[in-house]
Image (tube, rainbow, N blue to C red):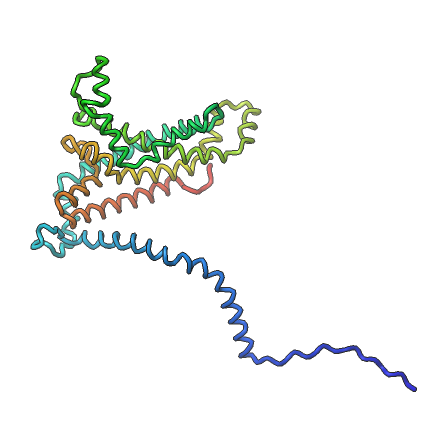
Length: 324
């Protein structure tokens, strides 16, 4: 008898799937894979919409009212004004250019001094010494104090009856009853010192955080090559801190330009308008004079100035680029 030939088992044939069914399966897999990618955006969407509403509505309303004559105390004058508010700002307003000039002076002095002292403090507390943790806490503590409380502290310190001038007069320096905040020759220096106390820790915190990321090997190699402390600072520390300094100065410049609480509490813009910044002038125009249309136009001009200066500063400083 002939032996039976054993055939290898064959794999079962796959069932026939129509092209339409294949397309639906592929589409379903794509939708299933896309769902996890969309989930984070769906979760943050409510918070994002709320933030957009709280930010977009005030900004758009300011732009809208800048084209209006809007004063709740004089409703018969309210209505569309077009660009009349802007024309008045640049041609007939006797306070705009003076307050803008003082704002630029205020920003330049405050930011440069805060950067200088903040850098020095960051370099000091970055060293190893006994009580460093306590020293850092004392350096950074003014930044944790609110603006209103900071203003109250310096109002008491500058009080002519119980403040610094009283103790100086007891030591024979100056006269009793002297108020630095009411004297045009000393008021600018007084408010600068008060704001330095609050602003210096901001630079110190940011610069210290960046200092701690500098590789120690660079300093060791520089010492081996004979570089002193000054050359290490100029060629290692400063280049590494470049982006941190650019960002911190930009942020602080914007905040100082918009500074209202400290100057309003200490001087109210006086004496004789010597410390009136553009934002403080805007606040007085809207809150005291109730001229919200004109104040909105001033706010729009200030916004354009800040936006333009920020763009130019970032472009000239080449923020985020490579150090040369």
